[in-house]
Image (cartoon, rainbow, N blue to C red; front, side, top):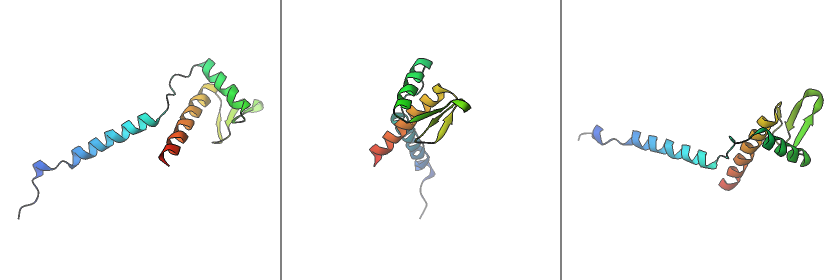
Length: 96
């Protein structure tokens, strides 16, 4: 009895299709972090400081994102990180 026809093997097609679907899911779950300008970042950081989510450390010229323990020297980097971190947490909460 002959084996499966190698021309009918679609496993590679299926694997590629699955990778594309996973990439689309990650893109849909991610938040938009590319549009953070300096003013937006500073406003967000001020709100986060007021909410005790970010702690400024003036002597080291850094900002500490308390929930993650991550330190940043740039308010824009911290704003982008926080948006991504929040989007990741929201996506995890939806998956539970």
